[in-house]
Amino acid sequence: MGRREKPITTSRKALRELAEWLREQRERVGLSYRELAARAAVCHATTLQRAASGDYVPPLRTVLAYARACDASPKEARRLWTAARCEEKRTERGGRSLPAPRPQFIRDLVDLSAALVDLYEKAGSPPLRTMEHRAGEYGLLPHSTAGRIVHKQTVPKTLSQFDAYLRACDVPENEWPAWQEAWNRAWRQEKQETFGPVSVLSRAFEELARENDNLKVERWTIERDQLVELGFRQARELWGRAQVHRSRKPARVRPQSRAQHPVERAVPGQQLALPVDKALMEAGSLW
Image 1 (cartoon, rainbow, N blue to C red):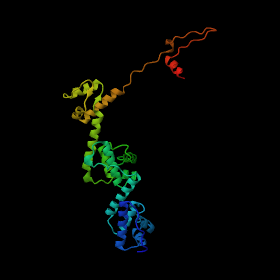
Image 2 (image 1 turned 90 degrees about the vertical axis):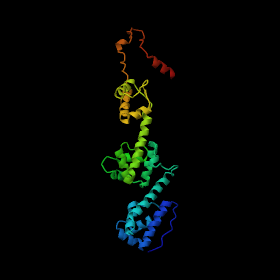
Image 3 (image 1 turned 45 degrees about the vertical axis):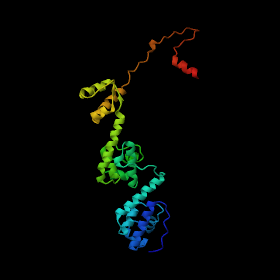
Image 4 (image 1 turned 30 degrees about the vertical axis):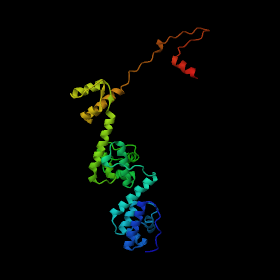
């Protein structure tokens, strides 16, 4: 068995549980760290000893190699490591004042963003490149997009990208329906807040009114409930037409030509009077 190990002094609960579990597995098989390293074949004895010291969270591959060398459960090793990693990340950020909402309690994109960050931390905060690889199809969840999601800068825009994020965070597929419903609910709330009430040009409403007999248009304003009744597909079309009307710039006013400006002919000994813009005169007076 070798020398007796130093006591675990960490105050982190999850890290202590991981270190104690690793030590228990080594004591169960009755091997020294040199013998464990020989069985693991991928880690040095000193690396295995530091992994069970409780001073830091070791890499996942080291913990899995330790568990295999002790004939222990890799699933339990991964669970304990994930909890310790999540605890470490939260400690680095100063902790969290409020827990992230569960899928059934997600109401809007703010709740959804907090829940997605919580999933990332519970997955052990894997590298972004690893998340991109886990997502499956190339380009479905780029590492840059995953980085913006975990930093609360955006949320998945499509359901397929949302599923890819769940897969990258090792969320069991039997839990996906609840998360998908939360995603739909959050985006429905966002669409309602965006669309209503919307004031646009009357032409867009008249076109939509001709397509929908039950639509009531009152002085270029359509209420949120009416958009919900029409369905978001038609609401998006309406919104797009409204943006087209809003983005149209007024006709440009051509500047006056030189021939339209009164110009005096220069006379010997006489100062030439040039036209001066009123705005320039006012600006000059400020200096």
